[in-house]
Image (cartoon, helix red, strand yellow):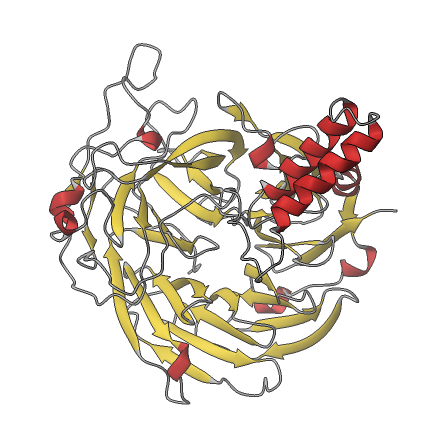
Length: 510
């Protein structure tokens, strides 16, 4: 049985959630969900040294005066004002290549199958369920249906190693903790830690799930490994204290029909998708908080009434809480934090899907924008005959009714329809490392999708109304349904894996 086939008989009108009490943490991170695009705070000055921003401003004014003959205004002034705003106003993520969109667009549009990757076949190992590059891009790992993990050199397309019987069942997901340690999870309900320097045996095996384990995340701040599975559990593992016998773990969260779980890049939020069409968001995430199973009551939701044109009356479901989600009841300690949401506060949403009157009944693939600005979902229709790739922007802002209302919801910005070829299998999408491009499995190939014709960043081309994603390029190089895709974090390269067990590499054609 495939490790990623969707379960049947799911209740689309009820999601049962169990999790922590959401109480206030005295020593938690300041993960208040602030937008990463906010300006950086002014750097501290050494005694007697001028402030860097003041110095920059003075230099700019002086140079402006030279350009315009001492007038301090004109073209020179506007140029330096633009440069100053661009340099100081971008916050933590300043991309030096953000304006080189013409070069990036040319590279993306010329992506083609690499001639030396045609023989990257894993047919004897079964379907390819997941691909993962090491952080330095030196190793490509392949999670296979037939219990094995393959390792390739993505530059030379050379096979490095096969981890024979890495698990006792399908290998579903691979996650690198750093450039040498990585974790794998399987339908055998276990997680395994591996070291690239010693691949003859596992570092350790982790036992705690009661059903198929589907994905792995890692919090670099606390060094906690986070896993989720079809038993509905999200479990944290303390890798600071692992031994050959495993490492301490605890059940962090539980929800019915869990499909995928992801952490935002700054680990301030956890997103969970379900096969019943709900998207759960845990805000002000604190993975170290003790668990109190059963503290969340059953959350029942009703779909809002539809108008004659099929649109929902009132606000979008992606921009408001679903009925019955009263955070003050879900979190007994919410009243202790007046004016702010409690740690691990829960939001339950039914993401909007354009043109689908009954909405999607299953959220399969779930990914996060590399800069934490948006989430990428693949949703299927109730009849399972159509799928959509949708991008939702995080909407930050003060709560309207603190502390009951959460501080964040989602706004659908872009979407595109997908033909559901290979029903019952989950197709894993991915963002490019710079967040400009989306790679979506599309039948026997992949589609490269962009937010606009210039392959611009999402933050620079947010539409006033929902827009269609633009197809940059379609590439067909498989003889079976493509199930997973992944961009290299360091090279202009893309990998895809299909149901028959073939891995294809794509790179620009010069």
